[in-house]
Amino acid sequence: MKIMIVTDAWEPQVNGVVRTLKNTTRELSALGHRVDLLTPLEFRTIACPTYPEIRLSLLPKKRLRQRIGEFAPDALHIATEGPLGLAARAYAIQHRLPFTTAYHTRFPEYVQARFGIPLTATYRFLHWFHRPSLAVMAPTPVVKTDLEKFGFTNVVLWTRGVDLDIFHPMESKVLNSARPIFLYVGRVAVEKNVEAFLKLDLPGSKWVAGEGPALAELKSRYPAANYLGVLTQAELAKVYAAADVFVFPSRTDTFGLVLLEALACGTPVAAYPVTGPIDVLGDGGAGAMNEDLRDACLEALRIDRNHARAWAERFSWGAASAQFAAHLKPLPRAAFREESAAA
Figure 1 (cartoon, rainbow, N blue to C red):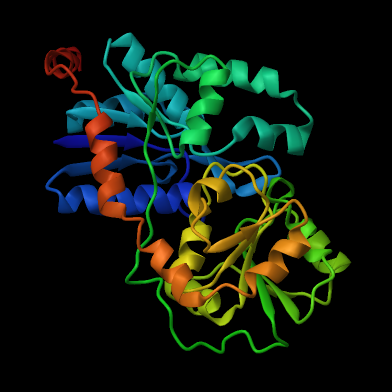
Figure 2 (tube, rainbow, N blue to C red):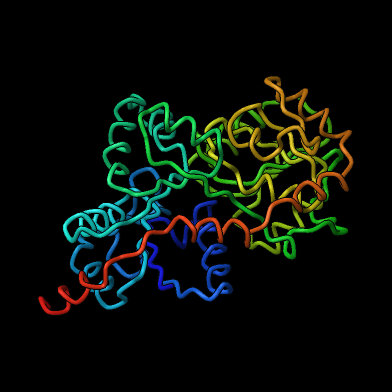
């Protein structure tokens, strides 16, 4: 099957959406599918306000129409709700083409945290955007239920995985600080609630790996913590393996791939009992969830690292990608014949 994926989230961004799409593309190719990614790299872009690493595509309609017509996909998937996603949605509706979409992040909660816009306003936009989609792919049952509470009627499950060959237990001393070592990995932004981790009174030392708009302020307010920039996956694996506990302070993530990456390296997780950690950790005992994040961190120190790794082995990118492919909807060939004739 020829699959076109349209996404506003792509390099140089380093986040769960980009990693999900890269791993899914790799696994779909291994299954014999041909995947074409349409990303901001093909367009003139401007920086997203307050988030310069996010590039917004300018006037993408003409190029997008050309690319879809040339590739003539068997299925069209719109991964994000940005300029490219909006242009692809408009194209599909105009040409009466079936398409699928995905709900990767709790966008309304992020917008409320950053700009104070009410949740209801952003959910109205999301409901409008996803309504024509034949399947809105959500990463967990909790997120699926939440969307349905907001009136979404076309939600299906598309779970996530972890690369167990890259992320695995190993001897690592790259974090040479006092033990126990508590680690956060991810975007350093207000919606990630990183300060909730940094302000904890914990023994040992704290590390933060990642970049984002809140990094400079947090560095100045919490100079005792150790800060790393954006790392490759191989470098991240060594960092995870060197930590004693991975701390996930976010209350707004839909899944949290970093949870799986840490567990795969044998590092137990401490988190709040919210969507994301609940779905990844469940009652498997590979992490500690508590409304008192400090208590969760101290409890996670007692978890066996072998058990954390064993829990991560339950998650496969191959199975997740097969699930993704099963939700895709075939496109009518006539639409592309008409497009070619019009051109």
